[in-house]
Image 1 (spheres, rainbow, N blue to C red):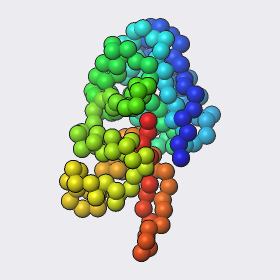
Image 2: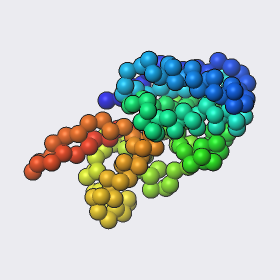
Image 3: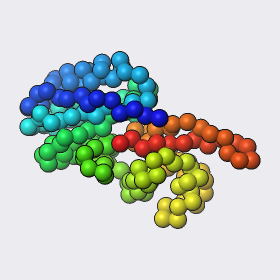
Length: 186
């Protein structure tokens, strides 16, 4: 099970350029690497007034790529405390790189920023509702229109690789065999 740790607050009011993006990314990476696995780190923009595209690309997009590569183990990030300008900037940068990230709005529903297909978005939202899901769970949902169990498995694996689902554990199923249990990053 994932643990949400205390947020990392970006202290600077103005975030611009690749050099500053690299500096902040390295601070966050150092912080993440000291934490145990199976964590979610909220990155808070509560003190930020302005952020340019270059900073976002250098800091957040590269950080998400490192998470997607598996290099950081089972460590994840979400963004929070975004004003509309920051939210739009992050969304555009992530879309440009064909990445996505969870925006923890502080309300009951999270948003996905960046590029994510409708079927993957719907599956992620279903995972949020259910708390934990398996391939068999989503295969049985008619609105997903999955032709076979492999298609369901591929969908969950894709969400895991995007850093939106965590493969929590595997469990034995009746009649033999094992199935993976996924938990949504939120």
